[in-house]
Image (cartoon, rainbow, N blue to C red; front, side, top):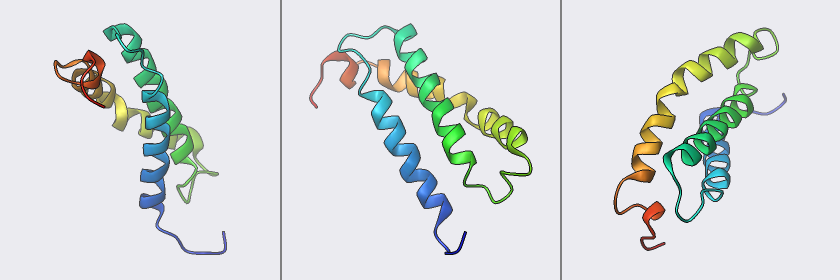
Length: 95
């Protein structure tokens, strides 16, 4: 790579775009199982796409993917609770 750039910022932008894409897939009246599947897939895609931003990805891709999955494991549960909580978009609220 020939230029310097803010990798954490870029990772955040990528993560937000992927997450938003998958959140649009949540049905109007979702159940927890549907939402969990969508969230888990979104998180996996985020982990895979942002892992390549690590300087040492080419020398240890499996390890970086494992670390990314480990660090993001709790996200699905946290997001599921947020999305399925009363008053969220999942319940037909504004937005």
